[in-house]
Length: 416
Length: 216
Image 1 (cartoon, chains in turn red, cyan):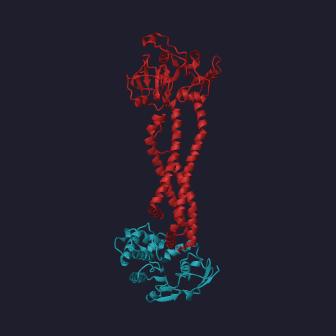
Image 2 (cartoon, chains in turn purple, cyan):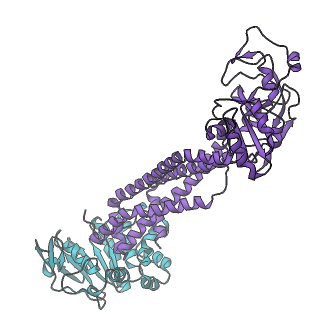
Image 3 (cartoon, one colour):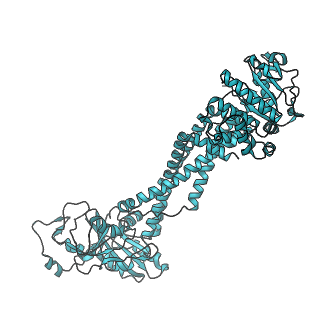
């Protein structure tokens, strides 16, 4: 009965009501986007590596090892010697092992040395394998396979030359040994998309004339000569390990952690991820708390808007009372108005979230490798909308009760 | 009979069915308080208020609100209409709170249109915004709203004070014609004694109600 009146009353104050709804919408969009980014980031991280039982690197922190070896975030403090790598590879528990060598870059993308086994054993998103969309896996010493984002950003296609820079953000380049793009990988939504993959031998090859991080003056070994050299690496950055039986994972992990010839660290990717969530959990909670406070602030703004409208609406309330409306009807109408504003705000907020996702999805993907899926609203979003409506009803109780008291005192006669 | 700050003593005031009574009084003579008592938005500290054989002082606040919705049509001095509603919504407003009155109206929209025509309003006025009308037209809409569903009593609080002399006369003609058609009693409050000759009876406020200030 009063629904139509509440809507008409809201329309009559379209500008202030619109502003209030917009404030609620922006706050709800912020709240939902924090949650979307949070869950998206978690899913994206968790999807990056699957099927790998242990990650092995020089002894540092387990989170640090996970970040630099899998996510290409940060750097290794130390390397693992080739001898240690081979010792681990020879252990009976090991089903497969893939070495990783990091440190060089091309433009803004990192170069990773590995073996062909990487393409067989690296799995992402619940066991999916890497696929080549164009070209082939590297065959020649100076072949490279590039991730989808590398190809898209730098507009590379199969056969294009690539000159690798020494180190990260470095001006010194390995220009004597240019690479050739042999293959481009399918998009995976993982850091592989932003990686240039070369063979372990290639990493050695481009460092033939380098010592102590600098090129030896005047030394430029011809490529043909390099091809004849023994390019077995002396050290690697990390290794991905698969065990024959899950039951052996912990035994192998302990063995590596207690390896006497060199301080090593073996971590279970899932456990390291949990540790990472533990670290960022506080920030997540803080972010959620701040964004929920923004929603509360918007709702308090709505309360203030209703409050300030009460005086000018006393005559309206007196008309209602004269027509036989109970004070409770006036109270209900104000609460209904607030709930309508909150509902519209929450729904508009959700719409803003989707618009934002459509715009930000490719940007976040290319800039941070963070793939935020655009899914239909889940029960969580529905609950957020309902919670905002309920909170709107609760905060509107304050001005509604004031209107109730005013309408009891005024009756049909407004004494202003 | 009480209100905060002053008390109003009304020994007796009665209005017969179908009668038109003008209640004359200056500002501050307690007219509004008397109307609020009749409409049941305030209660007397002693005595009774009988409307259509019902002592409304024995009713609960909610029952009094419903009673008012069913039995009394109210016309204010000005700012009478809900500005955000159409004329039609404004006229039908009391029926939202009065199911019996709605039944009496039978076809509320048709009756609203009939009242508008009878009150000299344009035929398409029902869909117009209330604020789009002149003050005189708004007052006629207020009359239509008070009359819809044939309530037995019409209470009008200085409805002509915002109108010029010609409009006043025309407005009263329409008001009398429509209340007579519905056989409703009309109790109108005013401070203008010139209106008296048009009513069945004129009652001076000081003759029926004495104000005692400083008491509650």
